[in-house]
Image (cartoon, rainbow, N blue to C red; front, side, top):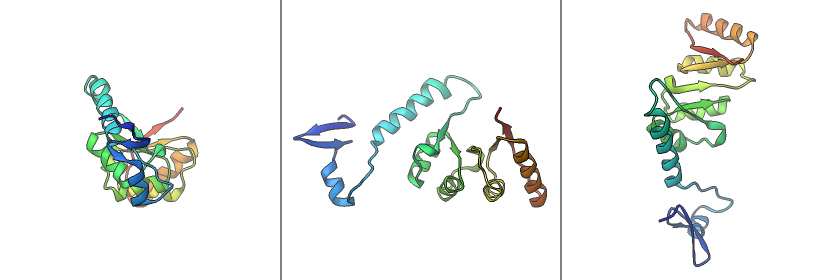
Length: 152
């Protein structure tokens, strides 16, 4: 079975008729082929993670993030790159392991940083010196610490 194929003029995705999906869920409807996602995750694991010690790969949640997608990424053993409070919230709702979260983005609010620090996000990528000072302030206020990286 192909991930995408036409049968009698009807698109099928992983063997499921797009017409039946539209009837069941309405339109517009976004449908992802689980087999393609699984294949790509397997390629990342086999060609990169299993091949090189001390490496990690992060899924860029800005591409598409739902609780279900976060669960798929978690099960695959990848990290999750989040760039907003909404993406962080979705990851938290999915119970994504905080140590495998990376908070990235050049416009992080104080509230987003505080939430990330409280949740124990694995690494916060800092974009500017004033952001470093803000993280330091939040950590002192909460008696917490944060792992950071500087984007240069």
